[in-house]
Every structure is written in C-alpha cells, then in structure tokens.
Image 1 (cartoon, rainbow, N blue to C red):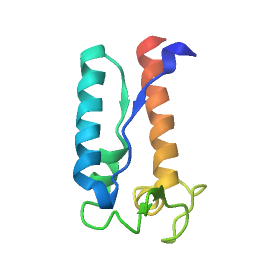
Image 2: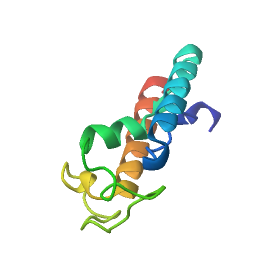
Image 3: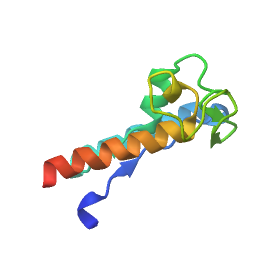
Length: 105
C-alpha cells in the first residue's frame, strides 16, 4: 500500500485562518517538490463554500457530519458535498485513491 500514500491539507481553522493557510501552502510546495499527490481538503472547502464554510463544512476545528442537513452517507451530489465536511473528505479520498491507481496501474 506504500504506493497509495498521499498528503492531506488540513481544513481551515477560523481562529488561525492565516496560519493554516500558510501551513497548507508549505505542504503543497513540499508535495510538488517530491512529486507526492495531495488531497487538498482546504482548497475544496474554500472553493465549495468560500463565504460560509464555517458552520456548514466545519464546526470549530472539526468537519461537520449532518449539522446542516447533510449526511456522510448521502449520495455525493454537488449539493450534498456542500453540506457535510465528513462526506466531502470521504468523497475526495475515494477520488484521490482512484486517481493514484490510474497513474500507477
């Protein structure tokens, strides 16, 4: 399973937004330098909900599950992926593993 490793950015943290952004920028640069795939959770959260990610996809420092009407087990539609941080991360993980498998196998 070593060939399926990849890095994850950390989700945005409202109280330390700039620090988490800086951390993730460094992580992306290291991954690019080493040719390591990145699951960019921060970018996906901020792309899908640029103005209201806090309280919808994140609650304090945790991903949301079903607090905003979403469900981690719902069909991964565009709208559902905007309602549950856990579902978004799970779906992104499946997509990244499939991408790596296509490249390797």
